[in-house]
Amino acid sequence: MRFLEKAPAKINLVLDTLYKREDGYHEVEMVMTTVDLADRIELTPLKSDEIRIVSENRFVPSDSRNLAYQAARLIKDTYHIREGVEIFIEKQIPVAAGLAGGSSDAAAVLRGLNHLWGLDLSLDTLATLGAGIGSDVSFCVYGGTALATGRGEQIKEIDAPPPCWVILAKPSIGVSTKAIYQNLNLETIDHPDVHKMVEALQEEDYDKMCANMGNVLEPVTTSLHAEVDQIKSHMKDFGADAVLMSGSGPTVFGLTQQESRAHRIYNGLRGFCDEVYIVRMLGTRNTLD
Ligand code: ATP
Image 1 (cartoon, rainbow, N blue to C red):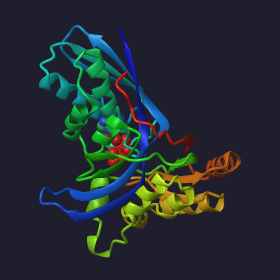
Image 2 (cartoon, protein in one colour; image 1 turned 90 degrees about the vertical axis):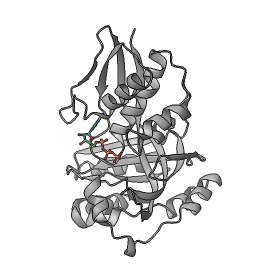
Image 3 (tube, rainbow, N blue to C red; image 1 turned 120 degrees about the vertical axis):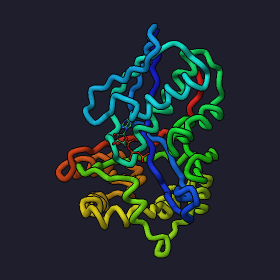
Image 4 (cartoon, rainbow, N blue to C red; image 1 turned 90 degrees about the horizontal axis):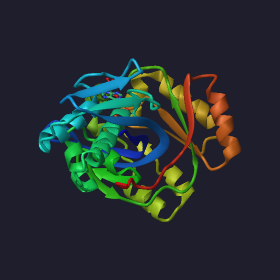
């Protein structure tokens, strides 16, 4: 019997870094929310004791470098599971884009194997496990909208953003998250107001949300890749109310509440960028059904 699980992308409405920790990670404060651009994960039980990754996307590793593989390995080792699984990943989320595609695949595998192997673990337990794979995996286990602190693995559910359209544009450049953090100068950061963003969501205030979006990694990525700034300018020119880079980039997202304007931005951007998507924010948390 096969089991299907959706693995949605995330965007950062706010990404702030406070200081560099002794373990080498940055202490962060982020507001993250899921959008309805999702990979499709298909889990098929195998009699042989192996983890098999199958994907038609050439950028997705098919060995232990795959975060979905690492999720399955972790579950198998922690709960002494002798069965195997084939993990088919139908990729819709662009790879290495700042949209947490790999982390979301890993989280979907944790949720899916919990079901498939009848482990009856809570989302909290899966999120704690996921933190061992990557900082964004815990958030992706829950989905919805959250304030993430620590190195990103401390998750507090907060109110979902007011309804709006999200236009995602991914320039065809690769960005290394590690390199971006290495180039971040903590002395010169212009910190966004994370508290005001949380308040805006509580108050369902779209304008306040737009006014308080911010990402301290954006100036670092734009200084290395001018394309990101160009796409931001085009998005604003086509009528987006607010524009920001997600995560360490290079994907840029723009917001609008008007469907016709969303299509105008989408169509306009397709002239400048190969990968453009028009999506909604998901807002609601995952359940274990
Ligand atoms: P984040 O926003 O969490 O920093 P990202 O969206 O920038 O992540 P990913 O799409 O997760 O980046 O890919 C980063 C790298 O991880 C890729 O270069 C790829 O080699 C590797 N990777 C491992 N597992 C996966 C997966 N399931 N899907 C895509 N890439 C994966």
